[in-house]
Every structure is written in structure tokens, then in C-alpha cells.
Image 1 (cartoon, rainbow, N blue to C red):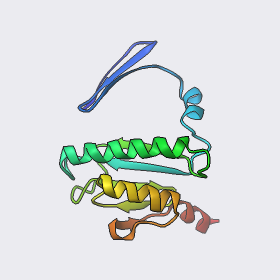
Image 2 (image 1 turned 120 degrees about the vertical axis):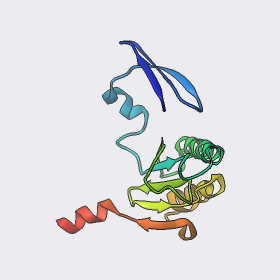
Image 3 (image 1 turned 60 degrees about the vertical axis):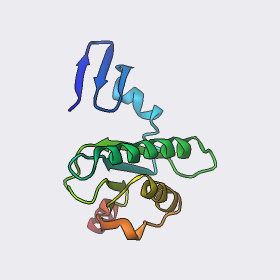
Image 4 (image 1 turned 30 degrees about the horizontal axis):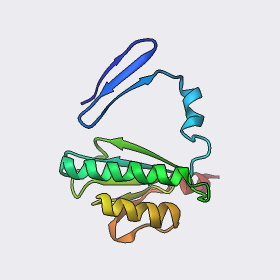
Length: 147
């Protein structure tokens, strides 16, 4: 579990994998710096420990962060990617578990190699990686169906 200690000017967050000190900035100021408003995809990754070995989850998260940075720095890509690590997506087997939005495609066994395919084939190529997909819950099409 994360331990957060905040003062009016700084916030130090420590968890099992890394510690960072950041200046507290209002979300309205941070959002543009993270690409919010221009994002094409948001990937959530559960890195265990319930669904997978913690080391496997840590390696998958590292790969996801590296690839997201590459995608976001490549000006020739039409994609803009935001990634979020979490400790539970409620599917506690065959992890790491990942979900890609906006189309709500859920993946099992999303280790570092599968993460690479997920970014290359799904986020950049537009085609889900079927052999690891276990569900789809397209929230956007559901909204269109209500109109």
C-alpha cells in the first residue's frame, strides 16, 4: 500500500517500486501536460500481486511506461497514450490484466511481450490482440446506442 505525506507545496509518494517527490499542482494545470484532451487511448494495468507474480507485473508495467513514452514522443503517430497502474481490476487470475480504452478491450496474461503487442497491434494498429483478449465493453458505443 502506498504511503502519501503531503504539505501545501510538495507531495512524497512511496510504494514498493519507486518513490517520487512532486510539486503539488492543481489538476487543471497538470491535465494538458499529460495530454488530457488529446488522448486517443488509456491503458490500465493491474500489476498484481493477486493476479500474477509481482516481478512479472513490475516488468509489464516497466514495458508499458517505456512504450507509452515512445508513442507520445513520436510526432508521426496519431496516437496519444495515457497509462495507469493499479493493484486490482477484479480479475485475480491469469494476470497481469490490462484494459484498453476507449473501446474497453480486456486482456489477460499481459506480460512485457504481450504489452508490446498490445501497443503495436491494438493502440497503433487498431486491431485487438485476439489471443489474449477475454472481454470487450465498449462504453463509447453504448452511449451512441442510447441516442
